[in-house]
Amino acid sequence: MTRILIIEDNKTNLSLMTYVLDKFGYVTCTATDGEEGLVVALREKPALIMCDMHMPHVDGWEFADRIKREPALMAIPLIAVTAFAMVGDRERILAAGFDGYISKPIEPEVLVARVAEFLRIGGRREGVTEEKAGVAT
Ligand code: MN
Image (cartoon, rainbow, N blue to C red):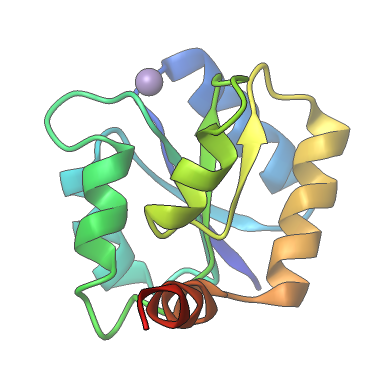
């Protein structure tokens, strides 16, 4: 069974994503902010983490920053769930340590397709870091 962690403070979005992923055979676990997300991630060792950006306490940006420092979690694919549509957000999100993002409002078919895709590709954050290191030198 493939376990997916969903971190999202909006109950409607959380319910929708949980419902869709459960229906497609994934096992879901949830958290409502980044701090709880880190605790659940360490406990459940999910195959994929989906994270809202705007949350109280520890938001998506800080969660990405923290998970990069956790050896047990840093290789898990991390997907941002965001309403941002502005040019440049994609680069900002990837630079923050996310492997990609899914746009809100959530469309079930897109969600399932993207999750399958990211599970296949796996985490690329180490690659992103190497890219950045290459630019710096
Ligand atoms: Mn939110």
